[in-house]
Image (tube, rainbow, N blue to C red; front, side):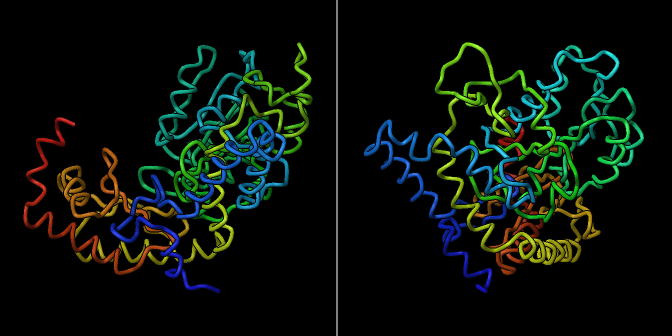
Amino acid sequence: MRDLLEYRSAFPILEHTTYLINHSLAAMPGKAEERLAEYARMWKERGIRAWGEGWWTMPMTVGDQIGRIIGAAPGSTVMHQNVAIAEAIVLSCFFPIDPARNRVVYERANFPSVRYLYQAQPDIEVVVCQDDAAIVDAIDERTLLVPISHVLFKTGEIQDVEPIIRRAHEVGAHVILDSYQSAGIIPFDVTALNVDFAVGGSVKWLCGGPGNGWLYVRPDLAERLEPTFTGWQAHERPFGFEEEMDYAPGAARFLTGTPNVPALYAATAGYDLIEEVGVDRIRENSLRQTQLLIDLADASGFEVRSPREPSRRGGTVTVHVPEFPAVHKELAERQILCDFRPDAGIRLGPHFFSSDDELRFTIEQIGDIVASGAYERHLGAVARH
């Protein structure tokens, strides 16, 4: 078994930065460039034949690789551009909305893209809850969908989703589990959870880059639901160019139009590494390193706004210091790449290839920036931004 730090050579950006923003855009595997070159070669040399030589089925074959990572059965996961599209496709299965079951229930800390989709629907009543426990209490016979985050994006808190899923099923509602901040860093099994749908993307812990959202549909649901947000790839015989829709079997009916082939090529380099290392091993290392960050922050007198309990802590530690947007800008100038979120603080997201020395260096630099006032020159620029 390779030592985790041996994987550093697979990520070129680590040669010249301290990269702790894997919760936002994970470091690119060097082989992603090779995969994109392979896409270009196929287009150049094979032309139209490339569709029949793998391009057309990539949303399913690459989806199956995601499926292996999240515990999904083969054929139950398909690729999309992003989570907003994936959730809109799920929602479209329930049009027209039944006035007696028109509630959508989720947490206040849900990601904006998800919130905006449901807020924009004229026939839906949105119920916003303070936390995961309140979601369970709010679900009733009027609830249609419960689109929740597995891990909250601002704080890195893992929500207790099993009671939510159980309660939703008791009243006939469906849960959409947004696993964007958990897939690739936290082990979970969509089959064991018995979740109805799961969505996510690849720009974060999966190291798969943009344009690679994904949608899991529980196999029994995939056989009976019919999305109205659809396209020709969802047809059982797409190249028959028939006038009427005849849905493909399984999760393929949740596809839309022509797939984003180059993005799918790029993604597999990251997925390969996640499968090779294993999410269980990644999680073990993540818990150790996030605890190290918390300990270092505590020793420096910084406020930690992420869960301290390991079972509730995702892969990110949020550190709150005075004027943290300006502190973040100074960190970037020192080639320490992280980010911040309003009302939260600086988010630090080490991955399996991060070193403990990088974490110590980062907390030391935050301390130096705060103590020296180096952040002050960025205050005006941050305010204007």
